Length: 354
Ligand code: PMP
Image (cartoon, rainbow, N blue to C red):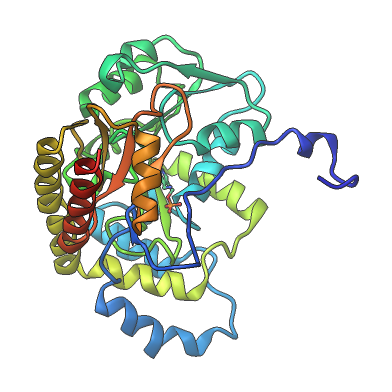
């Protein structure tokens, strides 16, 4: 920290992103990306069209992408706002709906960025412990006078709660905003989308980073009532109206329009997930039931930190969190079948050598 940093900025605790190593090629199963390249339609849309127009500012309202998403989800354009990744939409939502006198509530084991934004915006956080087995019980949130943020499916566990539970939260207090982070919804989870027209206090946040192979393109979006969406747009226009660049907008449109490719990719991840869970269970792992593109696993005898380190030295990168309650688990992204075969073979070798 330099002597120029303000006292306010010096107390921030910035997010530590998962490793993005530049030194060697790993079997990369650590940051929940898609193992598949973007749809060929995305590649064509960028390289044959939009790249020629990079001299011009992009459309701050991302009209073409909003229209494509509105068609896809059968919504109106006033229900949609675009962000530079869903991280940005979440950051905007924290800024818009939490503040002095309005704390933010989230669980103790969840996406690590929530607490970072809470600190950035100087918010009071209500941290609600998960129950046994990483179960989120909405009864623990029912009476909170706070903006509630729930990752569903949760990260890093992969567990989901039924939308009936979210509905109970929305109904209990119509003046309380409930943000449902559905970053991992496209791998067999149950989206809250059917609740959107019935509850104007629901904000759903989704991303093209996982199921549409665009983590590097940074395209996320919020879906909600026109009131909530215009509140978020107000923050967006106070911060960076051109938050999506031309290439990302064009990529997003092509990705949403290629439903066949989307279904093939997500279908493969779900099939490979089942295979991986069985293979790991045979090796002595206990795996938390997951509806996400990752699994959260602990081994009967081998400590998770050691597994993570040994796998890394063998060229396989998974995620290990140095945090209470979860430090004996590894989070493993579901990659291609070939990648998961390498993971399982490597684990077999490591565990045989015990
Ligand atoms: N929510 C959750 C639960 C996540 O795990 C992630 C990925 N790190 C995000 C949101 C943000 O993803 P992105 O900004 O790539 O859309």
